[in-house]
Image 1 (spheres, rainbow, N blue to C red):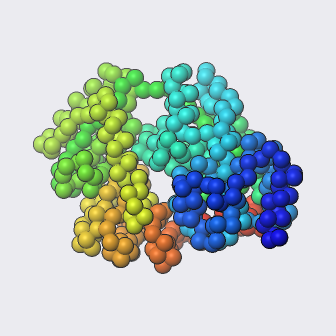
Image 2: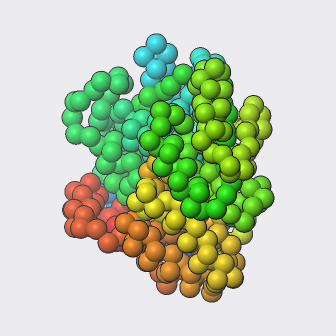
Image 3: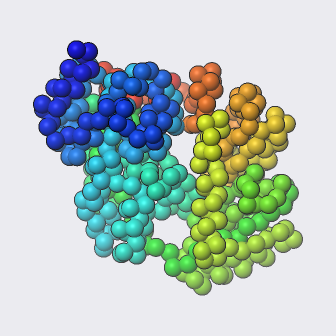
Length: 440
């Protein structure tokens, strides 16, 4: 009997109630997503889905003791992000660790397990007129654990900060099965090491987050968006005017290439969410600032649908040949950089659908076109981002591109420290090894 079958049999004896599923019984979604994360023989893999933290702890102790390697996931919505795992014996999903542990309504904090889906949490909080101000990719399927692992914040980071700014505490299972905690359940908490920031964006390479406490906010009474279209220089001047004004947008994006923009030029989307009177006053002020550019106001359901459509066009994968990237440039160069990158894509017969959050210089784009053309233009786009004081990381791409290019494009001086952290938290290379920067 193969060693992995012996290992699976032992897990069945140790954890008789845990869900163990062989590859042939997986759904098409799971099979496709795991193949996008691992190039080995996926048909030999089993998926293990613990229902309690205790089960996960025992499982990881056995994995560690037998020197097995695992691929960690929630619902699998972002398994195709990042590099290929070097070795996988089993897939561990937190999809059943999905309970709400505590909701301190008055303190505006919520504690939940990592497998809870983002939209499910928002539905629960909405009953108390609260929400978590994030707009991640695939909100219907994305779990909170996956959102923390990929630091997937979205446009709302302009007002509320990123994932790490909303995470107050975490519970995690280490690679050896030990359970650890950091932070707490209140906003003013300074106890212990700030593992929340360390684990945010680590792509599951340091430990498995099982529970987190997040800071909630009151649901805004009203939401409206001002959409401005025009030449890049005029948009850039308007961006600087807004940044120097007293306006307080929740989202502030420069966009290009989207079908519903109906323009070959850039567009600027400025979203206000607050009291009805405040939103109306700020929209009116921005209309005056934006003259003589083309200005449109989106309100009510139209506003909500527009932002959903924008996220879908950039984040949803239309086919396996498209490429999805995260980028960063100096905020002052946001408009010029996006315009330049669109021109580079056009010259290479590719289509770039993207946005940069004007306040931070961070953004995402989807590149569509012939696989060879996409590969050629990616090098030029990365070079441009680096010259603009930033970076370009490739998250989703066809297999040939993932094999031929450095996906993360990291050129900083922290790689040695990252590797030491990996060795400290996961000395045997059990967790998602190879998926992160520098093959970590």
